[in-house]
Length: 357
Image 1 (spheres, rainbow, N blue to C red):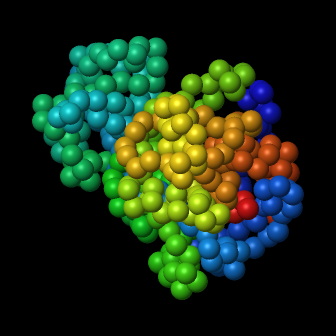
Image 2 (image 1 turned 90 degrees about the vertical axis):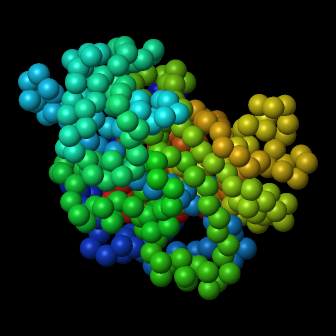
């Protein structure tokens, strides 16, 4: 399949630049996974659309203030760095994504707001890419990011971050810091909504996938099968694995909240297959543990764990629209997106949402 097969027309004014006035007051599109039928709702209607036997799975990764600006020592010019992950156990060397990366050479020094000095160092595989490694004399921890960093709003939000984003670009249940972008499907959930789901007896559990380049790096290949996903790390707690395996045994639906939850669950099932097993054969569809994944899901992918998906509206030609197309069918997704445009839904991170069942 071609990357252009996942393109669609989107007026720029439908790209949400700010969150809705009140968290959770968003449009919700219900899409029939098999039928392609579309019904328009509001997020407030969600509990009535979920059966009480459903197991919901959320990604509890918390967004790091990963966008940091340094001043080049020799010129005094400001440079933006997106900190992605640490390379060494001491947390002194970090992988970053940099604008105009070809101008950033090993040995260059940058001074950050709190006076810390970072030096670009040579790391295998970075030459010719948008990535550069930054080395510090002391470990870089979350306090450092709180002092120096900004909320890493995506590039299609054409403004700087504000205090409002510190709250609204973070899920209410976020727990483990590490994402360079928010798992944004969860932004629609409030404490009140979670309470209403609890009152219905709808069970939920959590996984952790720290969002990095695997999620948001664009597809640059003409043929999607040539695209290589970047590695991301995920954790499935023992309690979550037990709940999912029991639900699958009982024939209960698994509703993944967000594409990162989908990728985590299907990666865990894929790991069983790679070890020569068959998910579900011994009553276990997934195992607990922490592992890396570079799973790429596009039409033709066979889902082993996830039955339903709650998600946002995604960017054209992205791995995320390919993932939801794998789940519900490309024609169904593109038709639903066309209707969303006609109905003035808002798109992307701060936009409206879709429930596929």
